[in-house]
Image 1 (tube, rainbow, N blue to C red):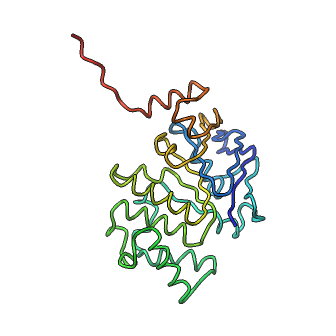
Image 2 (image 1 turned 180 degrees about the vertical axis):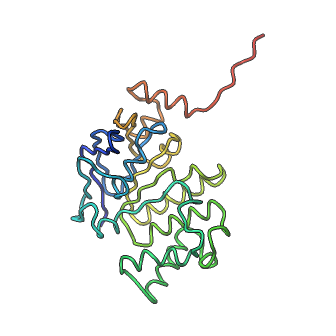
Image 3 (image 1 turned 120 degrees about the vertical axis):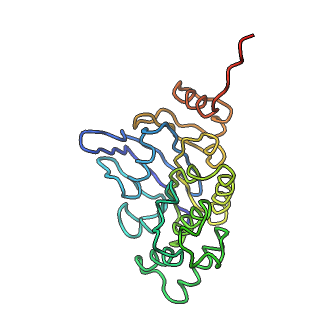
Length: 254
């Protein structure tokens, strides 16, 4: 069964500081949804609140088409996260095999031959194969590490993936490979994505809709096609678009 997610009036506070103010959005099962904004806009905090790594001060997070409640083991199996930095998110002293076997053991899902089958299958799914199974992170490239991180998220067979800038730490030549892999996996496995990025080109490539955030608040919600065609209503979104276009050298005076 495909699973979507609904976030209603989400508020996240750290002491006296409010990182997210009353944010609401819904993602249909099988949809890819983006969250964009400048650094410090609260977009990564939203993902962390959804998966339980940041405190939810007010509001609610619930899965669509599933009775699992936020914070329960069933919810955690269905909702997995891929972090931004593949160099920091993998344990340096664990082999790929152990990193993939650990979630299965924690959730008591599979052991023995079934665990072996799942590990082999998920490595094939992310384009690595059995030759990478007993390597350590320092023996892998950045793109290979992120593929391992994606495999670790998929090993529990979740329905929803939270993607926190999944390609920003990678070389430009590798970013497209990882994005194409994620889109392929979404289609083949019927996954739902919620993706955070500051790169509007990445969001328009992978997502169907998105919310623009500034200082923890929603600025506007729009279709990715509207963003690509510059059909936006808010000045802040236009500023993000200009920033995303990159540096343009002014013409030299004659």
